[in-house]
Length: 351
Ligand SMILES: *Cc1c(COP(=O)(O)O)cnc(C)c1O
Image (cartoon, rainbow, N blue to C red; front, side, top):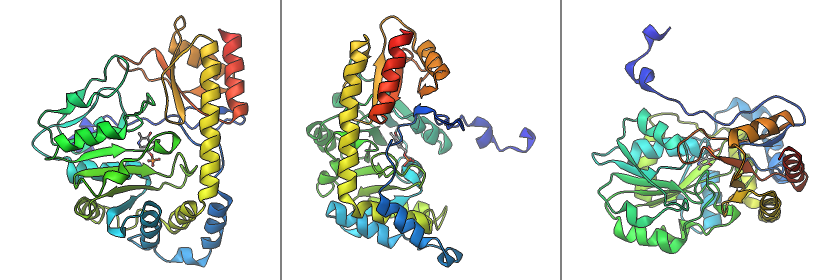
């Protein structure tokens, strides 16, 4: 078939997401999904929308959802962009705001989708090494660039950069967009959304996939100055008029209206994370401090890939990245206490 391929397609190295095996009773700790179901109010809202309304196209602008997100964050609707998962939002950010002469900057260890988007859109990039404790050093970003992006907390390390550092970066980097991918912010950090009014080059991207248990619904959003949002709208309206379907819009609105459920489940994940960290440290693992819903861990004596393979035999899957500097690490999503206990007891036997 490949003789029909365009040169662009030939040159691509697509992103490979963590596997979604169809095996029953798996302890699935490999893709940072929330172990708890979505809010019952979300499921009810989706049920109510499931009917003859599906005959009609959804609102191309997802107005209700933009209003709900704007209200939640105390901002205007024109500060909000929504997309089919934050991955799609990120793709539009790369196309709309990062295609410049100067290179895009992001950490050497980070979300592995960034280089994929850069390649797709022909964006030149430079990676900036994390320090030897796997922390982002903002001093290292003080060079000419066409944009800066990193997750906060970073993935797959879980390490958080505080707002003071982010503000320092913003005050120095005023000629290009700084995009902060806050997929995991609800599990332990303070959002940079509060700085939006002060910096017109700051864009914050969030998702409902992790802290709101809706990875299957595909809803993400970006918050920033209306000028940045307009750039994203221009790309979106040149690509897909209806990125969010009717069920996604209704479900996502309901998720923002059920604050209590969000707080409860978020706290449960944070508590389980701390218990899991303790359990793994007792087994001799080195565990990076995490502000996310996963832990990044290394065992001093056993190879990460062989631990992952052994766990798999036990029906537990975790994520291993065959990448420089982190080959000896495993990324383990925080499950329910029961799942975490199953992991720790399997590891206790295997090691
Ligand atoms: C999970 C994740 C995303 C993607 O989230 P979706 O909204 O499900 O597309 C984006 N960025 C980072 C760093 C993530 O870990």
